[in-house]
Length: 229
Image: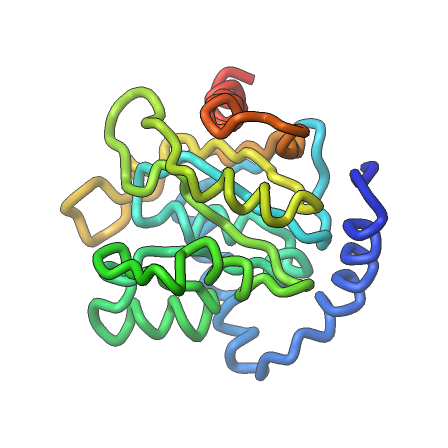
């Protein structure tokens, strides 16, 4: 696929080289591979790429959020070379509960955990996300900001807009996650194997002078549209 600018293309080339030589120990890599395979088995996820291809260029994958498994299933849907360079952004209050969650988040996902209760002015979530990406990594974010059990997407939080504004070179890839909420219903601890579908859509960018409200509406519609394709 064509990249919007040279910086993306350079990042892509660097990323491809880095993706296979990621500096993680064999045990961590084996655990990542096992969990990715387990997630695909339990969710039965079929993966579709529509007007978009897997790539190691720097991206922000933004998706609807209906289940705690969304992070794992979306992450597992990426090819390994892309997955190794992609860090989920997750809620600190959930993923730091208990050793297992904390270990998976920090050791396996290499996740960026955001404190939703104590946001510091001098260290905003957007700044933390940009810092964690550097010039190498991609992110998985859920712009609704919480799990949504309704039939339609909630309004998106403004973080995606400010990410796009501060890093206009990033590809913003909409993702629709279907049926994962039934694999691990709210309040349950044991997943139920079901068929899910993960759909990646065409990348988008913040347009010149595009107002925040219009951009967030366009991003939300980009995810919503994938549900019916």
